[in-house]
Image (cartoon, rainbow over all chains, first blue to last red; front, side):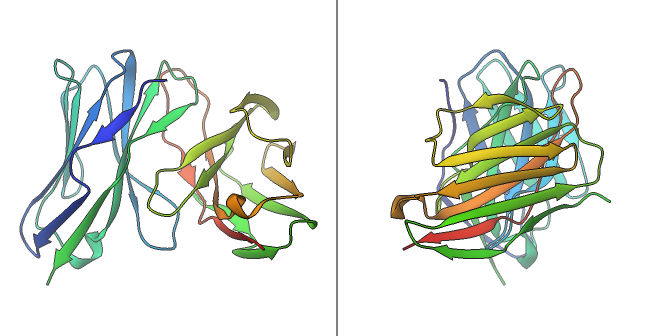
Amino acid sequence: GESVGLHLPTLSVQEGDNSIINCAYSNSASDYFIWYKQESGKGPQFIIDIRSNMDKRQGQRVTVLLNKTVKHLSLQIAATQPGDSAVYFCAENMNGNNRLAFGKGNQVVVIP
Amino acid sequence: DTEVTQTPKHLVMGMTNKKSLKCEQHMGHRAMYWYKQKAKKPPELMFVYSYEKLSINESVPSRFSPECPNSSLLNLHLHALQPEDSALYLCASSPIRDGGYEQYFGPGTRLTVT
């Protein structure tokens, strides 16, 4: 099947700076997208989601942007903190079929 | 209660053993999932249960046998596993509604096959 991918394997960011994690998806029929955070030894934790009828959604310190024209998804983390160090996965869902396809993951390392 | 629990946290088993992984949620979710995750890789879907019925099997070998005894419980029975089956096994649950909804993940069971 089609896959979701990330551009950068590792992102190092200074504490307090903003982080941007990118994700390219290839399935134009996908209509729901999620960002997960996975810390070492833990399961993925839901961060934020967005549906295809939106292009931006904000949460607490996080913003997800969706560009359907170029099939691109990004996660912005404001004022990155040491606790944000983790692997971040984007995931897509098509037509609510209960099947999530995960991207490859992007390691974020916050430098104190 | 927005928690998915999994037991055991760690499991070491030989290739001839039979063991089971357990998962429980009390969020009223009617979809439950098993994923396999290798180190530094994304979760890979194995099975989906919808309304306690198996709806998706991603061509998983028969040495993995899922079971959904009721709407809150999900088991994964393991038999005659191979060393390459060593991984983190994640359980997740979600509501079933139009449009797709986030899946809530448990902490996983770290499985080592010797």
